[in-house]
Amino acid sequence: MVQRTGNEINFAVLIAENGADVTTMSKPKKEHKMNETEQLSSRRSFFTLIWIGLGFVAFIEFIGIVTAFILPRKKRAKTGHFGAIIDVGTVDKFPKESVTAFIRGKFYLCRLKDGGFLAVSRQCTHLGCTVPWSDKEKKFVCPCHASAFDITGEVISPPAPRALDIYHLYIENNIVKVDTGRRVKRSGFHTDQVVYNKKA
Ligand code: FES
Image 1 (spheres, helix red, strand yellow):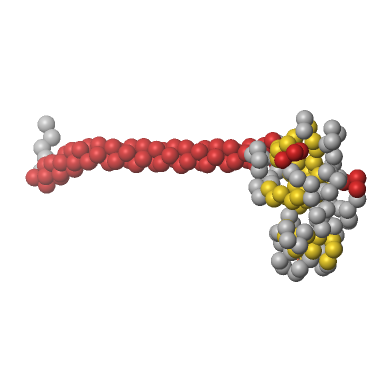
Image 2: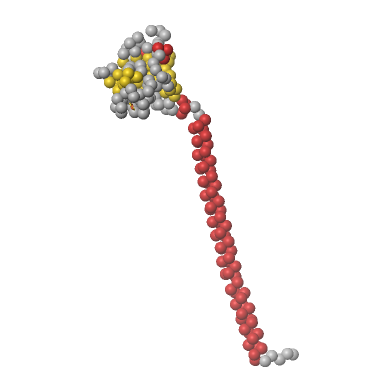
């Protein structure tokens, strides 16, 4: 039998106590570590979800932009608004030598003395101001630099360099239709620009 001194016994007790302490302290530490790992991985999944969401939103926006670019303008424009084909009414609704403004379509429907029609842009060809029709003076007078145009849109007073643009116009079943998606630039007025009702 081995006999231990007092010091040896104390030392053994100390080791036993420390050993016991080490075992009892290591459990919460492990749990703490596990919690940290779980938190880290849940944070990662959260950010991954955010990135996926943002990517999805960007993709939808991209599809929207591509679709808007590809679809023809006429289909996108609301009926009666600029960019669409606008039914302005029956031929008889417009007296000869009259000018009717279509605000949403951004044009004037001009009916000439001989019954022909022109859809004239309201935008001045000088610097783009909106040109009002003066029923009293029977001409368009630009408020910006005083260019003047007759009922056909022809320049009668500069600085406007050319006639007002016109829009493609046609008459179908006695109804006048203006395609505001088809704007025509012209240097001046020509009689072949005027549209007549075939029955007239
Ligand atoms: S913008 Fe019309 S005359 Fe200058």
